[in-house]
Length: 234
Picture 1 (cartoon, rainbow, N blue to C red):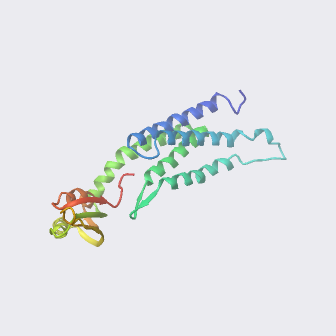
Picture 2: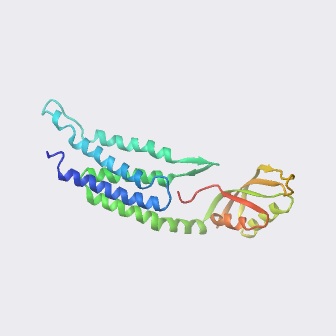
Picture 3: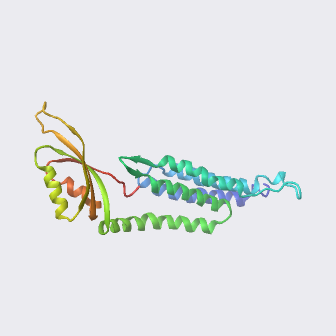
């Protein structure tokens, strides 16, 4: 093998593949959309592109005639991964989902670039920090949300004419949650089957512990369904 396709480059590709697969395994176990295969492909391909950028044009270089910037191809990885990440982010009912998954793909690309650039220690450190983020920061973030002054939106479907809305407001008031918005967003008549009509409202609450409001509101008699308007762990 020549200097551009030696065991060093193969080792760099293998390192990128291994580290990206580790991150992908974590994403797969947590049921995220960009799992093992996506992360492994992104990390390994990023390393390959970096190696191509470093060594792939040596045959056309000539002192005093052709001079190339070896970072020009690698720089395009960042913008290219941006398109992939954007495809992983979705908006539903005003809530943004998939930010962490998109960021992990971007992170995997950077780890692959570091491995391809011959910076294995940095690649290993960032991989380790990934698990600090997902295993330590996730529960810590949940704790902060539960004890901080957070704002959450919920879509609640309940049985009409049973005083459910009054009970919802009473529970929110008892827990010192501030109701910042309330709107009726739909309804369904069920007179034919003898069941009560259904009403759907959108409710935004602010205060301590509002991140756990879904379980509290869902336990009220007459509430048929509670949809959380924001995904805290994407």
